[in-house]
Length: 471
Image (cartoon, rainbow, N blue to C red):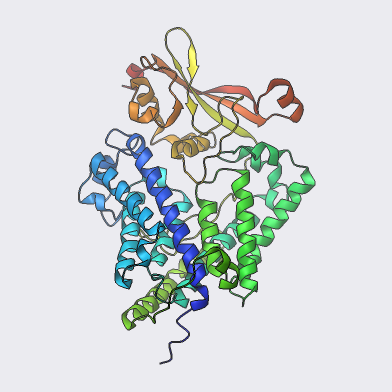
């Protein structure tokens, strides 16, 4: 059998870019887990992993933590993942035999899968599944001295297609503001975690917003088909995705969603474009028979797994960000099928016997005079979940009572998730949650007051509570 079609040597630079950017994304993800897990998921966290493991068996949530859990072991897993990610980022997987490189990528995938599957509501975002699916495909990309396998390159493009086309379809089928091109009249102001330039984007002229939405539809509904076209068309399609995702990174904080989408876009690019910014390829070895067989089995498996996301995209009741199996392979993706028109924020306050003091979050809007920070591609999980509360209090059922209790106890691990503790000496006597309406200030208001937000009270979200009330 002629195996010349199997090797895609012209995509060596594309593989180099994908692998190293993906290793960087793994490093961010493990670092995020390491720094936030104690307050969110630890033994004394808001939704403790030990409690979850008592009701979730291995089949429901495959994870190493079914073998053993302690906060120290979680830290070891996260730290090992971060260390191995750094090694891969700096080329360790390129200087070892093929089987060893595959093992390194497999270990990264198993470690992060173990975290995601016990992460509960804090790990329910689409970019978690996207990282796992891309990371699984990376196992079969091979090291630098083996010619890139063409089927895996195609599967990476197919993953990018599902990300972009699924997101385009859910917008077109969802909120009418995407169809009448008015979505960005609201989105920059009401998105989960605005960034430092979000106010500037929001204040762009409305005709520009309509052009933005039109460009988004073209990028997500038409351009994905060009990823499978001959070169240089596929490269042009990849570049369009990169530019669009870069624009989104400037306009808001969406964790590593944009970053990993850019990573996947490089899989469509030919070496003629990437050669000036990547290393010179070493002599390419032909893939051994066992590796070719493994890649073909992988491809056949993903053909089968693709049935569910394709059915979802073509169905009338399309859902966003759904994993159809516990391994997070063959997922469906999408974002912002609906756009909120008005921004509401839940503001937590504590009472020390003299006055009420507000708790500041690291990125969530709070103090009207504070410029929204740039945190992406890092993911502040508590800040994101706080955005969902005004949409429906049910989003906080599993963790909001625990958060209030932790503030009343002065729990150090939970307080580390916040930007500032207004009660450094002793915990407050009572805590309450107020609901405010937020909007970006106009240019005139900004010049007059120095504020980035204008907020007005709506009412109580959670009444005053003490530890005795919670008990």
